Length: 157
Image 1 (tube, rainbow, N blue to C red):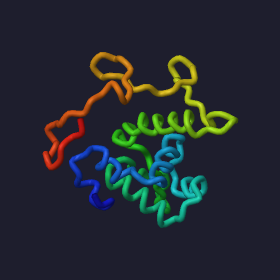
Image 2: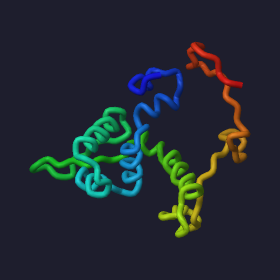
Image 3: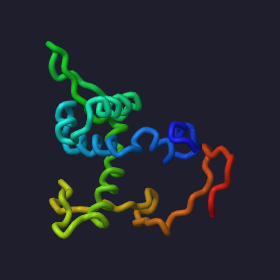
């Protein structure tokens, strides 16, 4: 499988990685969820080269994860805002942050705490079954072929 052909794979994870699967894109998304919207703010916070940042933002816009919205007319200046499609990535980003908090933190602890607005408590994300509401982990799920499966290879058992 070639990296540039990920979007053509019969795998939702591969197709997703084709859009958000590099470190700069994930950090751009992290900053979007922290309220960063303007090109110069991304550039300053991330220390990323302008052409790399422009490329990542363009890809996110092309795939409908971000949209450009004018905040000034003369001259026209635009900022990047998460779309509904982009907002749907929140649980993914939060899960990665939670994993990092658990496995990659130093002796000082988590650098950012996530507080649930409704109850005011510091929270960590959990995955639950959409049907019964029970928490699920890796050992609680099995993969079966769906309608989009091409049958080109066999799912592992």
